[in-house]
Length: 391
Image 1 (spheres, rainbow, N blue to C red):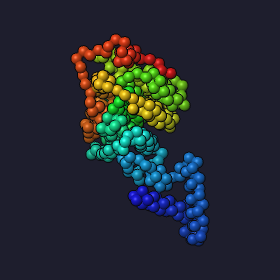
Image 2 (cartoon, helix red, strand yellow):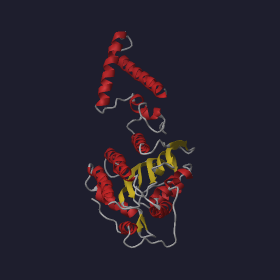
Image 3 (cartoon, rainbow, N blue to C red):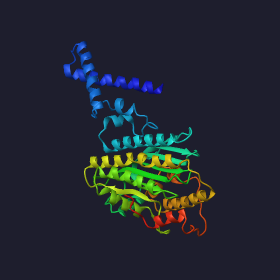
Image 4 (cartoon, rainbow, N blue to C red):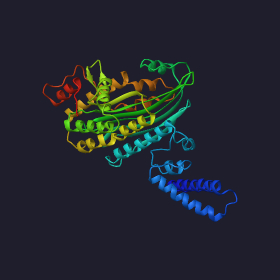
């Protein structure tokens, strides 16, 4: 019912815009029949524009917002989105909301009626987010797909963190805007790997009024049992998304991923990698946005086939025990080394439960545990200690 009401008001807005167009074309004394004919022609032009990929200004809310089956209404005021459809922060927010919807619906389709709990939140410092969590499902023990759209002044702890990465930011009270999507999926079956992805956009204005912007993100896989064909499919899908923009992206970002997700005190990577990049700012902003969008869109086709293939594979206590031990490594990395977790803890008003969404419901640590030589567990460990090229 609400959908029909929204569409009715959306159509009313279209009529209003077309009426304004008619007045501008024929003047205030235009005959009513000319308004009607202009409305018919305008409607036809609008439909042609929509189906040809064009976006008429002024009808954004009617054409791009009201018909979206997002998990929630957007964080940014729809009126602001309508006024500024070409701003990168608006385009990025709409893109990640699309990705959130597609991925959540795909995961729900693998469950037996289990749905995501949707929590739309706000922070008094500016902005907010949409947290989607599916917990205690038959297939997914814990699945989180979150987006955030945050504004405010950059905390000094975050400024120092960025300076340590080579960012030149002058001033103490730096206005910032950050938006992104972050997801971690912890399956119940040890034969289904865990997947993580994060794609984000950042803007900071320094004390001289100069705006700095960059993109970051990546997608990586953490299996508990190594299936070479699954890992190859995952990497090939990501490579195809990268190759559409540059053949250097996949090898460079695959290497970066292996380096970033290293657990130094264990001497092993968190998983079998994927792609990872940060501070991506060299080049045309629109081209970089398209690259990030294609990488985000590759998540579902890279991961869902692995879920479908393995979710009903038999397992026992031995496999479950190993899964919990590997999850312990996941926790270690996220709490000690992960850059996003550190930034979140230094940003007021984000909420600790949301920051810790990436952690599994269950994990374990056993004193000086070592896999049995020649076992499947040992085969995975060898790959984690010596990252492999998969494509």
